[in-house]
Structure formats: structure tokens, C-alpha cells
Amino acid sequence: MLDFPGNPPTSGTTFTAPNGSVYQYDGAKWVAIGNLAPSSTLPIMDGTAAVGTSAAYARSDHIHPSDTSRYAASNPSGYQTAAQVTTALAPYAPLASPTFTGTVTIPAGASISGYAPIASPAFTGTPTCPAPNGALTGYAGSTTMATMGSVRQGVTDGGAAATGQIGELVTFNTPNTAPGNAAPTSVVYGQLTAGDWDVWGYVSLAFSANNGSFVTAGIGTTANSIAGLVVNSFTPSSAIIVGMGLVPPMQRVSFSATAYVYLNAQANFASGTCTPNGILYARRVR
Image (cartoon, helix red, strand yellow):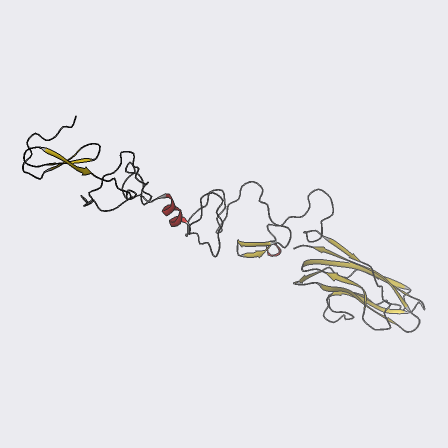
């Protein structure tokens, strides 16, 4: 049974039954005039509130689409969608395992938990440094381990220091070139890598004619030259010697690249030959 309005105001008033049938009051009774058609368009997702003008009706099982332009009404107003948040945060590094590019600037006076500051660092425990001559940027104004002698350490186990470590020892005993009369000669020599080295050695000179009258020896970085060297010399009072051994003073040499160091000797003798036997040692101090 249909529940028509009890007092229709005027003739022509219409009434729509729950089943969609439309009735019109003709002044005396309600007359069926047809059925309303349901809407065939999808419900809209979002928009401005409006009464609307369509005479169609919506089926009872219609479904509105999810509003993807904003969070649900239960969330605070003004929040963005997950997609918008992801887009907004794209230029920023994540908190977990960030990867930085370009120049990273840390504010003056700022600290990073677990890391020593670049200015006046205070280390605890045993600091671990790169291999000898490895890069160390930002520490005490140094650029390489080679310029940070106070940080580098030599061996403490009684063994031999490895190449590049403080305490590295290098020995040269060739070619033992025989000097001519009064001719400064590089008796033994060898190449050292960049660094600071203490160099010392020994040379003996034997004369075949037993007539040596003067011997001298020194360590330097110029081949076949005694000029300017700190030397150890000997002139016999009898003017004749069979042979002589000399220990030239230790010298400190500093190289920025691989270079030679020489044990130079000079012997004066009137005839015969001079046979040398020399050895040169170098120990890395930085």
C-alpha cells in the first residue's frame, strides 16, 4: 500500500513511490503517470555542494569512488596524501643510510654523535688511520698520512717495519765503483721513496801500490761530488797508507718523490788502483 500525502496542495502535485512509479493528483485522486528512470552515470568523487537538477534517481546499491585528493575525514584537515608527501620529501636524504652528493656543510659548533670534531678533536681508545700515505682530509690541516707524523706509528712487535712505515730500513751495497786518483766517486748509491730519511754508511779504500796519501767520504744527493758535504777525512802523517776505512757523518735527507742518495768518496794516490768496499743504510723517520 502506498502512503500518499493526505492533503495535496493543488492539482498537478506529483508523488514518487519507492518503486519509482510517479503519481499526479488531478484535484480528486492520484493518477499513475509513469516511472522515473535511474541515473546511468557514475557518482562523482568530489566537488562543490549543490542540490542538483537531475530528475533521475540513484539505485540503493550505488557506490561513490574513494576520494584520493585528501585523507579521510578522520585525519586532521590540511594533511597531504601519501603520494604528495613522497613527492615533497624526494629532495631530502632519509634518516636511515642517507647518500649525500655535492658539498655537505655542517654548522659551526655542531657535533655529530660518535664522531670527533674536525677542530681540536679529542679521541678515545685507539684511532684507526688509513694505510701509509693514504688520504686524510679535514684533520688538523693535513691532506695525507705522510704529513701527519704524529699520528703514524712504527712497529712494536720487534719485527721489521714494512715499506712506507716509520722505521723502514733500506740497505745499498753496490756498485762499489772504484775511484780514480783525486776523483770524487759515488762508491755506492740507491733510490729512496718520498719521505724523511736518516742515512749513514761505511767505506773502506785499499791501494794496490800502498801509496794512498788522502781519503775522504760523505753522504749526499749529488753523484760524484764531495762539494758541500759533511765529510770524514784522513791524511796520513807518513803520506803513505795501504788502506783506510771511513764512517761519514749521518745525514738527514727529505724527498717529495723517489730520488737517489750517494756515498761519495775521494782518494789520492800516485799510482796503481784503489779498491772500495762500501755500504749505505737509510731508515725512514717520516
